[in-house]
Length: 397
Image: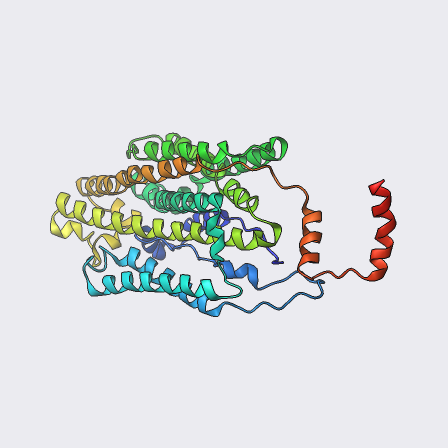
């Protein structure tokens, strides 16, 4: 049986938003035009450790072929999404090679997993409807979530002239609402056993928050931004842990670790793609708007590197007409992307309507004992059988 450690999928968000405010002035420019994608942890993490103290467990053979192919497919996919349309044209040989590498590695991964005794992602997981629906929905929400919030601290610094620390602190309403929604939803699930409606409501709230964020203007009060972010936090808080719960409740205990890790892996893929795709779209739109609204020299931001050199300090030192043109370009480059993420949240909502709400599992100890005995991990001696015989006879009477 795998030993699984429950992982908080949003912990990195809070840390990252706080770190944005701690960047030194010389490094803030890099944080404006690029987002560090989240680290992708694969499902193999739950297969490397077994419960201590269990005797008779068969040593598991690592699926090295699956790990390598998964890493190749993931790397090619992320580079394709990051470089396509920005560093290279979509028909560039490098982009085409990355697409081919993604497809070939993914196909080879499936073939290897079908023949491996201990695959890192057992293909039979995809026979479960709840697993498929929550995995696809989690991937779509990951794209929308990281695509939306990845550039918000930068946007706040540019459009609202707040410093780096202030932009990170303005994200606190979202994290606070996320925390409250997570705690309250957990309490409701434990008391009522009902959970299907929560991720559905989450998708609606995320879609509403994205629409609200698309209406942002530099002259709006900051409290409105905080309110919009709080709506986003409520939506995310009703989603993340509940999707994990649905997956864990759909499989026997011996497969919970693998199923959870696989689901989280695809969600992190969505988060990485969201950051990469939005970053590429935003950079291209900003570049085009600056060229359209400013003379060629001003479009360079007064420094080599073009729009990549724009920082709040540089923008604030510019003449008022140039400053206003840059701020409006920044606003118009980012806010429409929020609307483009709305269909992803709505598709995820529709998919989650088809999730089958199963009763929460409670008989954990009995399942563990039964599975361990059936797999030969726990042996029953003759003395144990003799001791159990009177008890079984009395219970039969």
